[in-house]
Length: 586
Image (cartoon, rainbow, N blue to C red; front, side, top):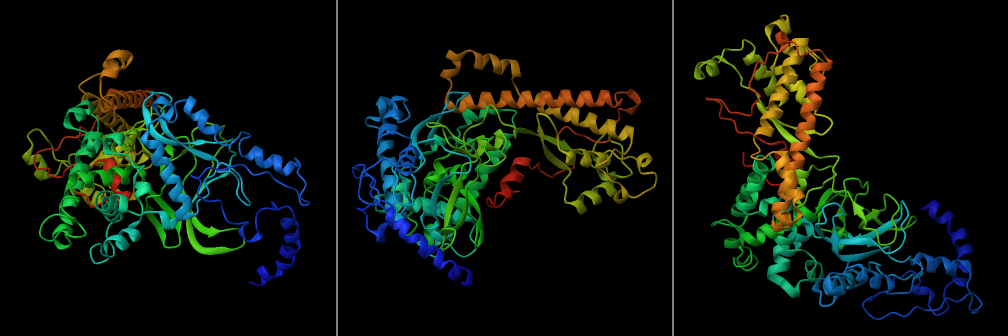
């Protein structure tokens, strides 16, 4: 407060200058209010200097340049000509009407400034909604997106959305009752319930109707957990199939536990949770929206929260973007109003008409396909899960499996794994140019022999370093076998997939899901082959390809031996759990 008070004289000295340069037709009391009702026709007002004389001073020219240097409405005309408003230059396109309703709602309910023209204290909004965007490499549709209305500089503020407009667990409990959605309910479950409530129960009466109107249907997103079995067969051999099946089971289980049965919300609160609206199909739609659009905001006063953020969730993903949506306290640099808002800054410069991107996080194509319904041809974070399944050759296992010898260190290894929180069957992500150090550490432990220990307990070894040449040879060779095994699970070769994609006429006859599946499985095979080549080169360079060094002390083929009842848990499932998804069925 003393610091703020000390600045008052400076602020008061500046005020006459600010008043002098204000447009004379606008009262001072409204200078800081954004212009509203953009859906009404606008006319560009002339700008006047302090004495009331017309002119073209530099600051007026700067405002016009900030608007893109074009007259109002010309940007939309350019979008029509480029096909970015849908077929027939947008004529009869219901998405255009939905876009207009969303913008009007944001301006009216949240005082969000989205105008293409300048006003006092507000530059022209730098983005515009495109009803159709296309992947530059695959030429597949990627739905709505946001384009740069004018040139955007690195660090420019792109949007501000009040938290009060977002759908969160807090808003869900307010909408459906805290007695129904009790404190501590999983965020995904709570928001899913509100999405169903707003879209299917309230419909046009919902205060979120304009926002719900731009949300896509399931078949416009197509994450793999919504694919029919016919399409999933195109992914046979890919680890994404197991993750898809697991997620499908989770969603069914959570629906039954929360909404179904005698103790479910449908039975206990039939007026708020009508059975004909809270169906499983609508539940799947709600989670399709959540997985593909919800944003985790990490800088809120109460900590991180999951939120559906209107308008911001129209921005598409790029693996090369460094921009992330987050939250902050609203207000200017001097005075904060106590509220919070969602904010986004440009991570680089954009040319006019260029699509704006953000990052959804460092996600593999399997994760993108599972949750978002698309995969990227160029994805530096793409990986394939490789299963390393070690048979603990205890006396009991050896007795149950003919030809298996007992490992004298088996029980000690099992105890060590238990202490460090590892299972006997683990999935590790392998990337095009590397594989995780954790996988080597795990295998170095499991390949230990009494000769390697030299009588020392396992706790005394640093498994991030080579234990011995024989141990390292066994480790790398076991990874080679695991990668070969994963490649062998695919019923088609990479060359087969390449031929399908090359025949463009036949390829277009496949459905969108099937085309995505063929591209995805081809890229997984390419990645595994690169990993295999890198491993074999490393073995040769280290001189570990000598016959007497090739010894493997455990199974790495992803097979569960007799007497071993633990089920595999994929690396992708581990990621889902870290996202805060509902409980794991295992």
